[in-house]
Length: 299
Image (tube, rainbow, N blue to C red; front, side, top):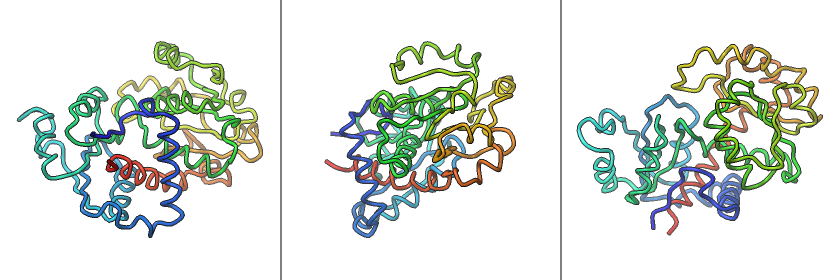
């Protein structure tokens, strides 16, 4: 049976707990896992820019004893001009054991995973970013043992990272405040209604929404491929600054997926401050993705 990792809402809490548990074990004793993927090859296809995802999968797979090959989408004909993506996938499956894809169309990843040819890992699409959020959840668990009663606040856009956060929240049912510009929120009401629950609250004021929060999460205002430049003006009062941090809990942590636009999305005082865990957050991507690789390879 082929195992894929395309969206968090396709997993049970038990399955995600197991992946997180493996990630913690790898982080604690990496030598114990240094040859677990020996003889395996991960193929990576990037149709969008990547720093953290590219590094964490590449280095992570090699530290598990496996090999990595990065494939250019156009060079291998994955752009569907020369042949269908499914035909390309069938050929790739004869040489490699798993494919991590970062692309513009989530429907394509779903279609490819349903073919059950080779394990597919979603490295980010226009719809979701499950690897990012599961890595973030690892960071949150490391900082707070009792995450079940934790107050988490998301301040920013209604984007792919938030979709994965909502998927996670629907599984673990932690308290989540969403602070999103009203115009952006209204455009995404259909998605939000499907994921609404009693532990989810909506705010339009970042200061009010962050009150007593233990974790403040955010992302870029403009995601890759987003052409609506008008959106930026909706975030006029959404810069994460000292006022927002001071209104949160004393031991609040600040998380940003990166890259960050300093002085706009967040002040340098917050991004580089004592509450910021953005570098730990980035590093934990590797451990969670190593655990995901072990999961998809496990028979």
